[in-house]
Length: 282
Image (tube, rainbow, N blue to C red; front, side, top):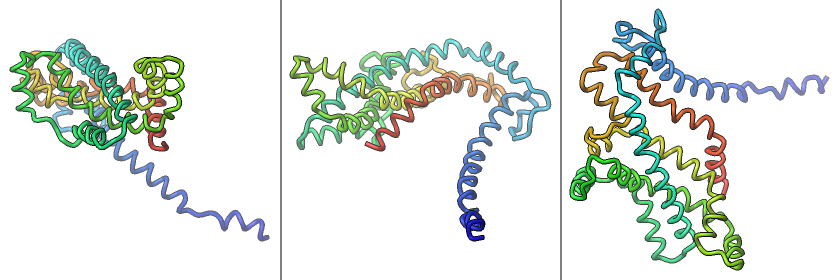
Protein backbone atom coordinates (compact mmCIF):
# COMPACT_ATOMS: atom_id res chain seq x y z
CA UNK A 1 0.00 0.00 0.00
CA UNK A 2 2.79 2.40 0.91
CA UNK A 3 4.55 1.67 -2.38
CA UNK A 4 1.36 2.47 -4.29
CA UNK A 5 0.83 5.75 -2.50
CA UNK A 6 4.43 6.96 -2.74
CA UNK A 7 4.20 8.31 -6.33
CA UNK A 8 1.02 10.22 -5.47
CA UNK A 9 2.59 11.71 -2.37
CA UNK A 10 5.55 12.96 -4.46
CA UNK A 11 3.25 14.71 -6.94
CA UNK A 12 3.53 18.46 -6.46
CA UNK A 13 1.42 20.69 -8.72
CA UNK A 14 3.73 23.62 -7.98
CA UNK A 15 6.49 21.95 -9.99
CA UNK A 16 4.31 22.20 -13.10
CA UNK A 17 2.57 25.51 -12.40
CA UNK A 18 5.77 27.55 -12.32
CA UNK A 19 7.22 26.46 -15.70
CA UNK A 20 3.80 26.60 -17.36
CA UNK A 21 3.25 30.09 -16.01
CA UNK A 22 6.69 31.19 -17.20
CA UNK A 23 6.10 29.79 -20.69
CA UNK A 24 2.66 31.38 -20.85
CA UNK A 25 4.10 34.76 -19.84
CA UNK A 26 6.80 34.54 -22.50
CA UNK A 27 4.25 33.49 -25.11
CA UNK A 28 2.04 36.47 -24.28
CA UNK A 29 4.88 39.01 -24.16
CA UNK A 30 6.32 37.84 -27.48
CA UNK A 31 3.26 36.47 -29.23
CA UNK A 32 0.96 39.46 -28.85
CA UNK A 33 3.34 42.01 -30.48
CA UNK A 34 4.28 39.50 -33.17
CA UNK A 35 0.63 38.83 -34.01
CA UNK A 36 -0.08 42.58 -34.04
CA UNK A 37 2.65 43.10 -36.64
CA UNK A 38 1.60 40.14 -38.81
CA UNK A 39 -2.12 40.86 -38.67
CA UNK A 40 -1.70 44.57 -39.40
CA UNK A 41 0.64 43.84 -42.30
CA UNK A 42 -1.98 41.54 -43.81
CA UNK A 43 -4.82 44.07 -43.72
CA UNK A 44 -5.92 46.68 -46.20
CA UNK A 45 -5.60 50.39 -45.52
CA UNK A 46 -9.06 50.83 -44.04
CA UNK A 47 -8.72 47.95 -41.56
CA UNK A 48 -5.16 48.88 -40.60
CA UNK A 49 -6.04 52.52 -39.93
CA UNK A 50 -6.69 51.62 -36.29
CA UNK A 51 -4.20 48.81 -35.44
CA UNK A 52 -5.74 46.05 -33.37
CA UNK A 53 -5.31 42.34 -32.65
CA UNK A 54 -8.24 41.37 -34.87
CA UNK A 55 -7.48 39.24 -37.91
CA UNK A 56 -7.92 40.82 -41.34
CA UNK A 57 -11.15 40.05 -43.14
CA UNK A 58 -9.08 39.15 -46.21
CA UNK A 59 -5.37 38.54 -46.06
CA UNK A 60 -3.29 40.57 -48.50
CA UNK A 61 0.13 40.13 -46.94
CA UNK A 62 1.95 39.30 -50.16
CA UNK A 63 0.35 42.21 -52.00
CA UNK A 64 1.54 44.58 -49.28
CA UNK A 65 5.03 43.09 -49.46
CA UNK A 66 5.11 43.69 -53.21
CA UNK A 67 3.93 47.29 -52.84
CA UNK A 68 6.51 48.02 -50.18
CA UNK A 69 9.34 46.45 -52.16
CA UNK A 70 8.59 48.42 -55.31
CA UNK A 71 7.29 51.76 -54.02
CA UNK A 72 9.44 51.96 -50.91
CA UNK A 73 12.81 51.67 -52.70
CA UNK A 74 13.83 48.80 -50.43
CA UNK A 75 16.47 47.27 -52.71
CA UNK A 76 18.80 50.33 -52.78
CA UNK A 77 18.28 50.76 -49.04
CA UNK A 78 19.13 47.08 -48.48
CA UNK A 79 22.45 47.41 -50.30
CA UNK A 80 23.08 50.67 -48.45
CA UNK A 81 22.66 48.87 -45.13
CA UNK A 82 25.03 46.12 -46.27
CA UNK A 83 27.55 48.69 -47.50
CA UNK A 84 27.70 50.22 -44.04
CA UNK A 85 27.23 47.17 -41.83
CA UNK A 86 29.61 44.59 -43.34
CA UNK A 87 32.82 46.67 -43.27
CA UNK A 88 31.95 48.11 -39.85
CA UNK A 89 31.35 44.69 -38.30
CA UNK A 90 34.45 43.17 -39.92
CA UNK A 91 36.66 46.06 -38.84
CA UNK A 92 35.41 46.20 -35.27
CA UNK A 93 35.81 42.43 -34.85
CA UNK A 94 39.38 42.44 -36.15
CA UNK A 95 40.52 45.47 -34.16
CA UNK A 96 38.55 44.48 -31.08
CA UNK A 97 39.87 40.92 -30.96
CA UNK A 98 43.48 42.08 -31.44
CA UNK A 99 43.12 44.70 -28.72
CA UNK A 100 41.42 42.21 -26.41
CA UNK A 101 44.23 39.70 -26.86
CA UNK A 102 46.83 42.28 -25.87
CA UNK A 103 44.83 43.61 -22.92
CA UNK A 104 44.11 40.10 -21.65
CA UNK A 105 47.78 39.03 -21.75
CA UNK A 106 49.24 42.16 -20.16
CA UNK A 107 49.07 43.03 -16.49
CA UNK A 108 49.76 46.18 -14.56
CA UNK A 109 48.00 49.36 -13.56
CA UNK A 110 48.59 51.02 -16.91
CA UNK A 111 46.90 48.24 -18.84
CA UNK A 112 44.07 48.14 -16.29
CA UNK A 113 43.44 51.85 -16.89
CA UNK A 114 43.69 51.30 -20.65
CA UNK A 115 41.12 48.49 -20.44
CA UNK A 116 38.76 50.70 -18.42
CA UNK A 117 39.06 53.42 -21.05
CA UNK A 118 38.53 50.88 -23.84
CA UNK A 119 35.22 49.63 -22.43
CA UNK A 120 34.02 53.06 -21.30
CA UNK A 121 32.20 53.45 -24.61
CA UNK A 122 29.58 51.00 -23.38
CA UNK A 123 28.25 53.48 -20.83
CA UNK A 124 29.35 56.75 -22.46
CA UNK A 125 27.34 57.43 -25.63
CA UNK A 126 29.06 59.47 -28.35
CA UNK A 127 28.26 63.16 -28.67
CA UNK A 128 26.36 63.37 -31.95
CA UNK A 129 27.01 67.08 -32.57
CA UNK A 130 30.76 66.68 -32.02
CA UNK A 131 30.91 63.61 -34.25
CA UNK A 132 29.05 65.34 -37.09
CA UNK A 133 31.24 68.45 -36.86
CA UNK A 134 34.38 66.34 -36.88
CA UNK A 135 33.22 64.37 -39.91
CA UNK A 136 32.49 67.63 -41.73
CA UNK A 137 35.99 68.85 -41.01
CA UNK A 138 37.38 65.60 -42.39
CA UNK A 139 35.08 65.66 -45.42
CA UNK A 140 33.42 62.38 -44.40
CA UNK A 141 29.96 63.65 -43.47
CA UNK A 142 27.25 62.00 -45.53
CA UNK A 143 29.57 59.21 -46.71
CA UNK A 144 29.62 55.49 -46.08
CA UNK A 145 33.22 55.74 -44.83
CA UNK A 146 32.22 58.24 -42.17
CA UNK A 147 29.28 56.10 -41.06
CA UNK A 148 31.50 53.01 -40.89
CA UNK A 149 33.99 54.89 -38.72
CA UNK A 150 31.23 56.04 -36.36
CA UNK A 151 29.88 52.52 -35.94
CA UNK A 152 33.36 51.10 -35.36
CA UNK A 153 34.04 53.70 -32.69
CA UNK A 154 30.70 53.05 -31.03
CA UNK A 155 30.87 49.26 -30.81
CA UNK A 156 34.60 48.64 -30.37
CA UNK A 157 34.08 48.78 -26.61
CA UNK A 158 31.43 46.06 -26.82
CA UNK A 159 33.77 43.67 -28.63
CA UNK A 160 36.63 44.37 -26.24
CA UNK A 161 34.37 43.74 -23.25
CA UNK A 162 33.14 40.43 -24.67
CA UNK A 163 36.43 39.08 -25.96
CA UNK A 164 38.88 40.13 -23.24
CA UNK A 165 37.25 38.01 -20.57
CA UNK A 166 37.12 35.07 -22.95
CA UNK A 167 40.81 35.34 -23.89
CA UNK A 168 41.79 35.25 -20.22
CA UNK A 169 40.29 31.77 -19.97
CA UNK A 170 42.54 30.44 -22.78
CA UNK A 171 45.70 28.82 -21.34
CA UNK A 172 48.78 30.90 -22.12
CA UNK A 173 50.77 27.68 -22.50
CA UNK A 174 49.29 27.28 -25.99
CA UNK A 175 50.86 30.55 -27.07
CA UNK A 176 54.17 29.78 -25.38
CA UNK A 177 54.40 26.46 -27.18
CA UNK A 178 53.79 28.19 -30.52
CA UNK A 179 56.47 30.80 -29.78
CA UNK A 180 58.93 28.05 -28.92
CA UNK A 181 58.26 26.59 -32.38
CA UNK A 182 59.17 29.95 -33.91
CA UNK A 183 55.71 31.43 -34.54
CA UNK A 184 55.45 35.21 -34.70
CA UNK A 185 52.88 37.11 -32.61
CA UNK A 186 50.43 37.59 -35.48
CA UNK A 187 50.76 33.92 -36.44
CA UNK A 188 50.01 32.94 -32.84
CA UNK A 189 46.89 35.08 -32.86
CA UNK A 190 45.70 33.97 -36.29
CA UNK A 191 46.23 30.22 -35.91
CA UNK A 192 45.69 29.65 -32.19
CA UNK A 193 43.71 32.45 -30.55
CA UNK A 194 41.30 33.44 -33.32
CA UNK A 195 39.84 29.92 -33.92
CA UNK A 196 39.12 29.64 -30.19
CA UNK A 197 37.28 32.97 -30.26
CA UNK A 198 34.72 31.81 -32.84
CA UNK A 199 31.78 31.36 -30.40
CA UNK A 200 32.18 34.71 -28.65
CA UNK A 201 32.85 36.52 -31.93
CA UNK A 202 29.68 35.00 -33.37
CA UNK A 203 27.71 36.36 -30.42
CA UNK A 204 29.29 39.80 -30.76
CA UNK A 205 28.65 39.77 -34.51
CA UNK A 206 24.93 39.18 -34.11
CA UNK A 207 24.58 41.87 -31.46
CA UNK A 208 26.48 44.49 -33.45
CA UNK A 209 24.64 43.60 -36.66
CA UNK A 210 21.37 44.03 -34.80
CA UNK A 211 22.41 47.46 -33.52
CA UNK A 212 23.63 48.71 -36.89
CA UNK A 213 20.82 47.19 -38.96
CA UNK A 214 18.13 48.90 -36.88
CA UNK A 215 19.89 52.22 -36.31
CA UNK A 216 18.18 55.34 -37.59
CA UNK A 217 19.33 57.98 -35.09
CA UNK A 218 23.03 58.16 -35.94
CA UNK A 219 22.43 57.40 -39.62
CA UNK A 220 20.04 60.36 -39.82
CA UNK A 221 22.62 62.82 -38.50
CA UNK A 222 25.75 61.38 -40.13
CA UNK A 223 24.41 60.37 -43.55
CA UNK A 224 21.78 63.09 -43.78
CA UNK A 225 19.82 61.31 -46.52
CA UNK A 226 22.78 61.07 -48.91
CA UNK A 227 22.89 57.30 -48.50
CA UNK A 228 19.83 55.17 -47.77
CA UNK A 229 19.74 52.42 -45.18
CA UNK A 230 16.62 50.40 -44.44
CA UNK A 231 15.59 52.14 -41.17
CA UNK A 232 16.53 55.55 -42.58
CA UNK A 233 14.59 54.86 -45.75
CA UNK A 234 11.52 53.83 -43.75
CA UNK A 235 11.76 57.04 -41.72
CA UNK A 236 12.07 59.15 -44.86
CA UNK A 237 9.20 57.60 -46.81
CA UNK A 238 6.96 57.72 -43.74
CA UNK A 239 7.86 61.36 -43.10
CA UNK A 240 7.32 62.25 -46.76
CA UNK A 241 3.72 61.02 -46.60
CA UNK A 242 4.15 57.92 -48.77
CA UNK A 243 3.17 55.69 -45.85
CA UNK A 244 1.15 58.30 -43.98
CA UNK A 245 -1.70 56.49 -42.18
CA UNK A 246 -0.73 53.33 -44.12
CA UNK A 247 0.07 51.17 -41.14
CA UNK A 248 -0.24 48.00 -43.22
CA UNK A 249 2.67 49.18 -45.39
CA UNK A 250 4.75 50.29 -42.41
CA UNK A 251 4.38 46.93 -40.68
CA UNK A 252 5.05 45.11 -43.97
CA UNK A 253 8.26 47.11 -44.33
CA UNK A 254 9.28 46.21 -40.77
CA UNK A 255 8.77 42.50 -41.47
CA UNK A 256 10.83 42.57 -44.66
CA UNK A 257 13.54 44.61 -42.95
CA UNK A 258 13.77 42.09 -40.09
CA UNK A 259 13.93 38.96 -42.25
CA UNK A 260 17.67 39.02 -43.12
CA UNK A 261 18.82 39.18 -39.49
CA UNK A 262 16.15 36.68 -38.48
CA UNK A 263 17.49 34.17 -41.02
CA UNK A 264 21.05 34.76 -39.85
CA UNK A 265 20.02 34.18 -36.25
CA UNK A 266 18.18 30.95 -37.14
CA UNK A 267 21.23 29.48 -38.88
CA UNK A 268 23.79 30.78 -36.37
CA UNK A 269 21.88 30.27 -33.14
CA UNK A 270 24.04 27.33 -32.02
CA UNK A 271 27.22 29.39 -32.16
CA UNK A 272 25.49 32.31 -30.46
CA UNK A 273 24.21 30.19 -27.58
CA UNK A 274 27.55 28.39 -27.21
CA UNK A 275 29.33 31.75 -27.08
CA UNK A 276 27.04 33.06 -24.34
CA UNK A 277 27.10 29.89 -22.24
CA UNK A 278 30.85 29.31 -22.59
CA UNK A 279 31.55 32.87 -21.51
CA UNK A 280 29.17 32.51 -18.56
CA UNK A 281 30.64 29.19 -17.41
CA UNK A 282 34.25 30.24 -17.80
